[in-house]
Image (cartoon, rainbow, N blue to C red; front, side, top):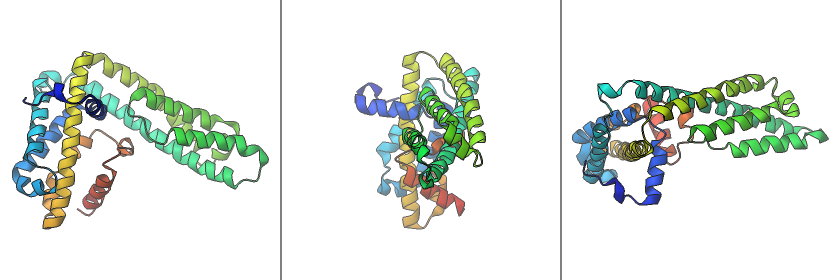
Length: 271
């Protein structure tokens, strides 16, 4: 691996680590291989849309770093892989529960705002605060569990529970209460087998580099495919390996790639 991880500026390093923590290394490895294969075929086209040879080289270096760390070896596919999948599943279920609860509370908020009852002001303030504090899904297990706990408390509020009773409140509450211990348990098991903090941070950093670069390649491919009228190019750079372990709700708040994600949905929905 020629990439020098120690020379990455601290702020950028932390950003990439936070990004990489959200993905399993097996998924990022497989996505890197798929994207690099697509680049071998379409590199001349995507280089004029923001993904050039230096980006492909950086992606290959990060991929090789994962390989050097043992990701992808049969011997390394035991407990770590299973536990990682359990964590991703628990995180996905938790974000789905969060999404459903917020949908219920958004409806409750509208109902409370339309009410003329003088006693609902405190309930309305409680719901408004909960929606504001859970606006973006936390990227780590414990902060996400705390968000879910806040939503639980809000749905248990006497006035809120009464309004939510006929619009999914009890179901949302049940899903939240089931998701919290499952998420915390999966997180503890995942941390227990991931290796030393230094090893874990390195893997997360490499994962983050790969995620950033494959997304960049995907954006470039979408632009180039439209410009050239070649939808097969966009298909070659799809991110199905990266997101295969994550449910739809888990990528609800991915951030900067929102516009690209909508483009992907539109293109793949027409495919």
